Image 1: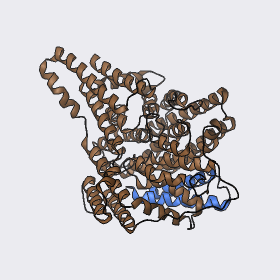
Image 2: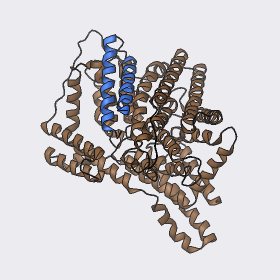
Image 3: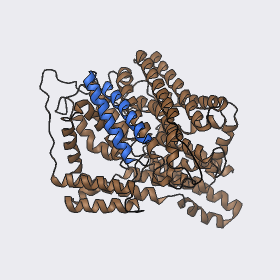
Image 4: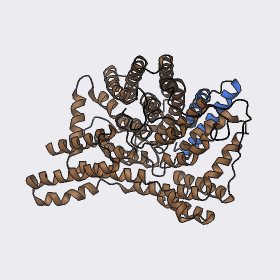
Length: 50
Length: 556
């Protein structure tokens, strides 16, 4: 569970940074980036041995 | 032992000269030649000192260094990926991505998923996903037809995707680079082969990809303003969204592929060799997709396979001629230098593959992971098993991402081709983020969270989520600050370049210190030694970043 939490938070952080780097700068777009990162983090955590 | 120093010197000189383009041969050819030369010298020396019998055993000792498991797993993984490609599985991937844009994720969230897709699929070589999806990413730009993204957005999208792809072979459970290290850690951690190195690599790759995107946006574009020939978005024209199509067999093969990954990773049917799972899945995909033999063979990329075998051969030749003993002694001597110590020596060692980036990370990983193993309780005793796992995590993520910035046909060059930039454009972004962020992130993740899941019998380890969170925030904050400061001064010319070098040095010191703290705990001397080792590694890495870009062949 701790692993999934870590990946979820890391994913959100990563997603927001990527979205900002790609010039998506409105609150809605950054939220979408964070949501994408959350999906990546959770999915990745499910695929890893934890 | 003199023989060992001679063969080690030949190996290192050949690698550095190949990197400097003083030897213009494929790196695999160079490694095979190095193997033959080392064996010949070994045969002469051993013939005189130990007699003819010692000569006859040399080839055996060399071949003994070739570990077949990662080679066959990689071949099976490439076979499966080839079958997936041939049956339209990648087309089905593209359709799913197009549909994601209409979901709550929107365009921004979809790009975040797309950039991280190589890590999620974790194929045995990043080139597979890169070859399949880079043309799709290019299509988002003006020249590609969709006209959705500006030039800057496209550079960040392709650069970040390539960064993710050329680190995704590390955590792959199907012949990934990390499995080489996991094999050695299995000597102490009984479940290491389940993937003890996967989570630290994936976590640091996920964060590192985002920092790479930032670096590309804020620094690389300012450092090389005239090196990209991409056209910008055409204003005033309607965005053309092309919805790709995929055959039904493509969806079916995608389902089989995902099922095979799940079986390979979680092993719900008990211990089945990963190669068996992959080959069975590939055959099922071939039957359903009616893939032709030519399309299948096109999916098998020989570079990583030949790279790994050549690396194992060179490693075997070094082992047979005492080259690793010599390397161990040299590093042991480095560890005795007061300003370096063991912590400083390790801070340099974990960065060695970013310092010498070859076309496939497996070449040096196969040769150097055995050396790292010797630092543990099995030989020199510099590290406990837990400390060895922490250093191994840092080493492997650094190694596995090293094909990205390699000028010797490295994976990153595929991305540079799609970005329409000169070779070397991505080097600063790729080497900086690996050195300053991904390497220490993998170490702290292993230390404070992952080791708990793989503890040896009788060991009681506890996770420290607070320490992990604190270190992650600190590492990301230092990287953001450094990127921000370097970006303020980034421009073509000598002065901005040396400012950038300064940024590399400071963050390199920080990375070395974090590695020392996570390996040896809160002790001042190892932390300072680690910082000094990190500084020396960063000095080398910083000056490898091109000051300006020139058409091939480009000196670094």
